[in-house]
Image 1 (cartoon, rainbow, N blue to C red):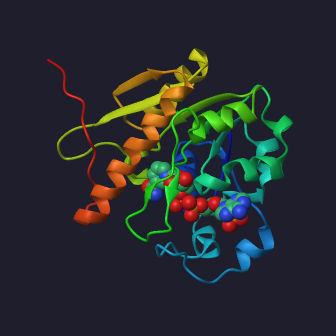
Image 2: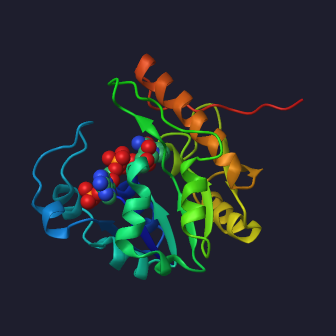
Length: 226
Ligand SMILES: NC(=O)c1ccc[n+]([C@@H]2O[C@H](COP(=O)([O-])OP(=O)(O)OC[C@H]3O[C@@H](n4cnc5c(N)ncnc54)[C@H](OP(=O)(O)O)[C@@H]3O)[C@@H](O)[C@H]2O)c1
């Protein structure tokens, strides 16, 4: 399958590595290809510059957001949360029509420094905003609630955590579940329609704040039943 990924950060790169390893074609989208390749500085959280990663991942194509939306049969939105709609607008919203769009973003407020705070609002989660912006696409909120390194390889010492997802289209959610199960997820919980994205985004902050406050990057929360 052709996978388009909006986002040159750690999330986009980690997803790309996994899809390439599984035999898919991948294009990562950025605002400005030349600028992204020319950057030699790590980002604020120490992610190495893109060109260094690209040297070890030569089969991943780098395109503009528009190229990437055209290319992808399935498209991930993995930009910084508050700019997701802007990135989509740079691509052109019609390019997403009838495609599955997986939203991994979180509304982080970094104005108070690290750890980030929650900038979400009920009824106006990023997942809902993206679905409203792309009415002809099938938006699925998924993979936003824990580290992307765990997302693409979910086997932890104490087992496989639960994966949460939400969206309005059942078939799209089944397709995303198939992708996840290929990565080793076993227990996938469909929370309901895209309105549930708010709670997924809030729970991501729980993971992130625990991570920063405990210097832990390999944890996951479980859902136990009786
Ligand atoms: N870290 C994790 O393990 C994890 C796990 C789950 C979900 N998430 C979420 O996944 C998303 C991606 O995280 P990340 O750390 O990989 O990357 P990030 O640093 O949050 O975002 C990088 C991307 O955002 C784009 N961007 C920044 N400003 C922009 C603007 N004004 N207009 C358009 N695009 C802009 C950048 O475009 P350029 O390429 O043009 O610079 C780049 O592609 C975030 O929403 C994060 O909360 C993270």
